[in-house]
Length: 503
Image (cartoon, rainbow, N blue to C red):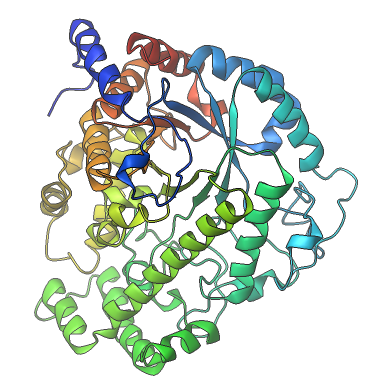
């Protein structure tokens, strides 16, 4: 493992020519002409995608200053604008829970059978059509692209009349209201909402692509709390795993899956998780007891795959809808950083499967919060399935099966929390690049700058950018909050890209 910042300037510059040569064999986000898997569709462009995530209403009063800053400091050429499917002008919005009011005008012709009623904006609401035109005019002056980033993952459910009917139902028949629950992937009204928003964005606005973000996983991972911070009090409840609604039941029945047996399986898993969190070790140990549960209740895995395939169906739906509205428009997907921690989640996120419908993948390869997040994942899973291991033994297991090698558990638990090295960014990017090899799908990792832990430095930024392109990445997306990134780190982005002769 390299020490942080160990790449000398001489070695860095020496690597620059190699990196520049590697990435010019297909670094842009030109749309696929046919299938994402067609190897002869790979574009050869002069520049990589350099994106930045941004909240749209942030631009309302800071547009020109923001664009000038990120383009000058960081050579940004693409805005990834956060636009949740729910943030539009709906009737029944609870102003107490949504003090900023409605977000955008929902063009009624697209929104049918979604359980919500589009309405005109009120005074003081953010008017996306008006603001978008201003944003578009300013980005065009600078040669910048705009890609809406549709996220429907780990935020609390908006208080909108009728919207609760789109959400998942847990093991005890309760509607979910927050992460790890979310809208039901098999609920026809939610699927209609996804189709409506994609059509609205692609047909109503001058956009250069679409990206969907879903930091969610299936019912087994949720029941176990198998994600970073999943074992923290209040973050997960094995009885609130989902989904067990009427739409999932009907779809399962067509596939010969018994909902009754699925519920029985998850009811059997629930006390295992609760007892583990209470420190009550099973007679034969945690892993043996978990394997026994799987043998006696194979529906645990059946329902996990059922949920995962439902997610893939909605991803295919987003892609096909966008391309029907605007043939050839690039469509991409954000990959939750849990893929770096959970071997279960990684198994379900097969990069090659994405190549069937994804033009690009934005991986959350965030080095700066990864240390704290890995430690919290270890804390979570050693409360049940891996409770027979010490924290360090579990971390060693993680590093072995996930192909990583970073700091010890004690070091990861220190405060301030340490970053992962740029080796982590390289390995995760390279694994994704290898996973889509031979196809036109491009890998544009997220570059984490002061996410959660404010521990990024210009040196760490430089090392991670070099790692991304050395691994074959086609670009990067600065993540997540511009205001927290720091001008010195933003300047390091542009300086590094210039050193690598990529801008």
